[in-house]
Image (cartoon, rainbow, N blue to C red; front, side):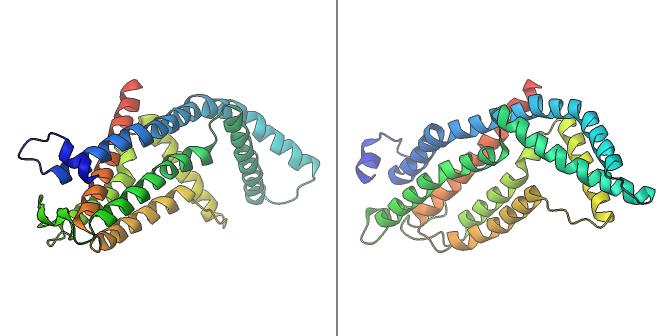
Length: 260
């Protein structure tokens, strides 16, 4: 890393080690992690354009099937109880059918959600550990200042970069909503209405997406606290990586929005 930083012909106004951290972050994220994000977006698009329409087309048949099953089972109860039972059975069948269709068309939800962040983990951990070793004294990074850093081997004394890191992480949680299509918003609203009705009927509804987003919001605060404890070189890497992730999300969302 140190030799590479000295070999790259940066302009005089760009400190070599800081510039190398930023350059390597952008390059590695572009080459090693961006393809997985694009892959996941294609699978999400297939879900929206293939799986969801097929599921909508099959929904009336599923509802009729549930109604017939309840008649065969000799269900007894008032109208409200019958509607609740019908909704519960139908929801289970619809979810199962959605999983079948997603698997059939190669766009299962779990791999789509997990593979992009997991692909970033080895790079993130490895690069952070490398910078941690390079920043251990005695180190040449001690002589380089950049932005609010007095030295890359020490943390930002103003706390500016860790706070920016938290803000970017927080923004990344809700960035996908900024370019939502009208159809996606309508579908989200419909799901929210279904959830409200089920809770009003006394059902326990778990919403993994909201739980995941809430966890990320809490993590954004945690990242600030952790970033305050690491050297400036790692802080710079984390902020650059987070900014790349946010811009990547914006770009992919904008591309999807324009495509529709």
